[in-house]
Image (tube, rainbow, N blue to C red):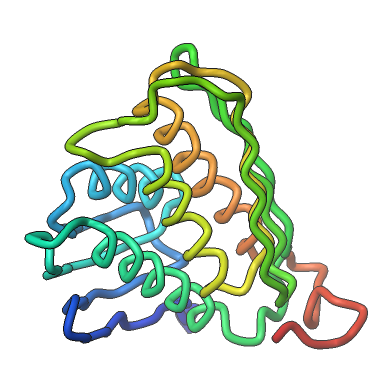
Length: 201
């Protein structure tokens, strides 16, 4: 009997965005992503590829206003999709951590899928905050924060170095994918929910 894949359908429609897609946690890294923000597409493709998640994400947003609504709503949908796909979280490893270098940039991501939201971002100060196509460090930070909030997880991101914002965000999204893959893996020794409380909300 084939193992049931953990997955979720993505659907959200507001006056600002219209979003559809699908997430398969137990995937192979296949993607079909079009948010209307080229740089965000690039980051999400890297995230899914290195995390081995199958992700389809189509976004029509009010980009004539700015990128904020599209960026935030895409993060809302992705966070909720992971929460839905993981269900009661039985058997998962729960914790994940990964350090990723990208040329002169480096990032570390730590995750706890424990049913509590927390977001911590640590980065050394420097002047360049623009990555590409108007996408900034703050946009990337807002995406990750919103994702963590809607997935209801602890997400800590620490930037060690890097003057190239593109590379800083690329290292962060790659590390997120790999750490999340680790945290969502099933541990054959774990028969129930990985919490002494007996539940993960």
